[in-house]
Image 1 (cartoon, rainbow, N blue to C red):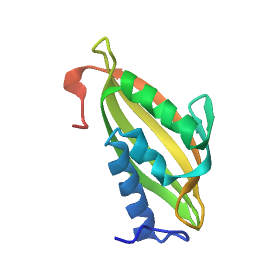
Image 2 (image 1 turned 90 degrees about the vertical axis):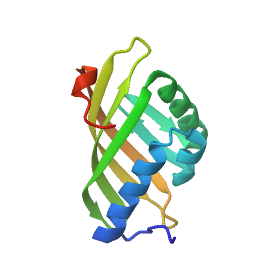
Image 3 (image 1 turned 30 degrees about the horizontal axis):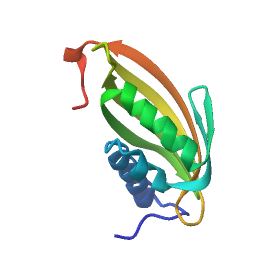
Length: 135
């Protein structure tokens, strides 16, 4: 399968979003970082990260704290080498408390289709286990 490259069309932008959702749901930092450039820049909530190694370390810690993580992404907008998505994910913490996180991401890609910038704004909502929607 040929990976979607910029400039994106509606179909290739949707494909890129679905590929991101699928790979994040593996919860495997080694696989996830392969979609990012070596010097990628991130803002995740209030954290600023640079490069694959920082992101890999961040993701390892994330999925040690966010158990039973399940993510859903949706294409919001796209233009040339940029994509905006909305997302929600659910997880439980080590104390068995459930959360749903909502957010938006702005992505920028290089010509090889690797993400060079990811800016994420995220809010968490405590939920009960019976309120879960994403399984």
